[in-house]
Structures are given as C-alpha cells and as structure tokens.
Image (cartoon, rainbow, N blue to C red; front, top):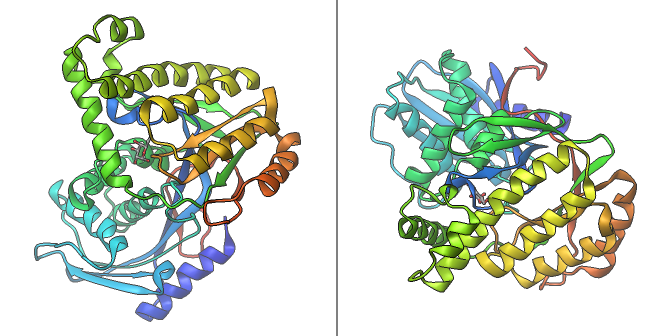
Length: 392
Ligand code: GLA
C-alpha cells in the first residue's frame, strides 16, 4: 500500500467536503502478459493486476446529490443528481467514467443514494495500464460498500464498469481490463476465458520479474483505431459464419479465406494465433519455462506489428532492445491496446539491472525522452479498506 497515496485521498476528501470519509476503496491497474485484442473476440487473455492503484474515499449522503473531487486533475470537481438525467461532461473526461458507473448501476435497478467521493491514483495515465478501468472499479466498489449491495459480485462490478465505458464513455473495449482489476490475485496472473469469464490463477514464479517500460509515445487515434479493429474482427467472424473468432482454428482460417479482404484476413490471423499463444504461455508460465515464454511473446509482438497493425516504430525498437538484453531467458512485447503506451517484459530477477541499463542507454522516444521503467508485482483485485486504510 502506498501510504502517501492514502494520505492524499483522505486529505483531498477532507479539504473538499470538510469531513472524514467513512470508507476507502482501491482498485489496481493491470498489465497484460499476452493475449492482445482477443477479449472482444471471446478469446483468452493473461493479465495480472499491478501494485499501482486508484483510491476512492467515500461517504454516503442523505440526498440524491453526488459530489466528486479528483486529486490528480488539480482537484477538479464534478457534481450531479441521481433524480435527474445524468448527462456527459464535455470538458472533464475523467468525470464521465464516474458518471457512467452511476448510470449503469441505476440501469440495473439499484436504489442509489448520493455520495461524496474523492479520487487519487498512482497509475501512470495514458500509458495503457488501465487507470480508467481501475477508476470505474474503485467507484463501483465504493457505491457497493456504502450502500451494502452485497449481491454485486466482483464480476458484476466489472461488467457494469465495461458497460459504462462502452455505452457512456464511448469506447467499445472488451472485458479484460475491468475483470482483472476486479478479480486480480496477489502473486498471480489470471488466464481468463473471455466467453465464460472463468479465470484460472497462474502463479508467477518467485524469481521472475514483471517489468513494464513506458515508451512515452502518446497513444494517438487509439479509440478510432481500436473500434476499427473490432469491426474488422466482427467482419471476419461473419465471413466464417461463427459468433466470434474464438470459434475459428488455424486450419479453418486458412482453408476458407477465399473472398476475405486481405487486411481483414491478417487481423483474423492475429486473433486466431494469439488465442493459442495465450493458452501456451499460461502453461509455460506455470511450469516456469521462461525460454518458451520468450518465444511466444516475440511471436505475439510480431503478430501485433505485422498482422494486427497496432504497434509503432518506437515501440518495436523498445521491444528489440529488451529482447536483445534478455536473450533466451525471458521475453518482451507491447502490451495493451496499442499505438504507443507500454512494453512488458518477463525476465529473471537477476537480469533486471542489465535490462534497465539497456533501456537507459539505447531507447529514446521520438521526442527524445527515456523510457519509464517500473518493476511491478502482481496485486489483488478491488477491495474496501476502512477509513484508516487498514483491512476491515
Ligand atoms: C484495451 C481494452 C481491452 C483489450 C485491450 C487489448 O486495453 O480496454 O478490452 O481489448 O485493449 O488487448
């Protein structure tokens, strides 16, 4: 737990509302080890929650007003009423994630009361580490805890958060980010079947480090390109006459490709091969077979670059630098939605210093910045702390 972050969210709450919160929730960001863009194809992903969080300090109100203050946006404020239609904020994007969660909780027919909420986090924003999913989960958990909605499971909260993003914020994302922020397990990655939402915990071997390197490339065009990839995948599924690309195997993909647009074919090939790589990688991780994991991560990156078209040259370069430093002892690939953001590496603890050094020496973003290296630990999913920040 980051004590400074806890202090900041409590202090922000106190300054904004002149009172103490009755509870605090926290939800982690995530890094995806492998299985990219497979979630909205009903496929497999292998993310872990990371020890960077969004915290929400909360107190119930007796009226239908919701007041929100965001420490990370210069203490920007939002206020809306639950007995009136909840519209969009044009100026403050962060506020729409909060509003969206309330709207989706309302749509579920839950009798919502007002609340005072303060938000603070330490997940690098715009880096593709799911700071927005963690905000949605921390808000959902706060409402659940304030109002005693015990019937809402972690998976329910994840689905509500995803709906908020799809239908209120306007990004057609899959379920991965919200589900891992809801259900992450300390020391483990989760192999998630995005059709059944069943998750299998895969222990991260003790001597293995999860390194995240921020490329400092801003993720431009990410929403439009993301939604386009999704449409291309859906077009491919229609071509093969299946519900989702999860239902196509490689021999079928190749045998029945006639008439399919060549770009759409390449998009589909990424999904079909990535699903298999993800299952193979979960097995390799469980067996501590780092060389095999490294091969699968390298294949995943090439497939994202050549078939799915979501990497950028600086990211490709960063992956090459890490792969050269790590050699056969682990692997590296771009992680997340693409077009910038972060690279993830799995490597022996003993190789971390050399990899860090290689990034410092050889990598610069197009704007001349160095990469931001974080060695992180797999964290547990969303939870409620009491107002003193101790476990309940
Ligand atoms: C974003 C989305 C996820 C997933 C990844 C790509 O993070 O929010 O649902 O599709 O991109 O794997």
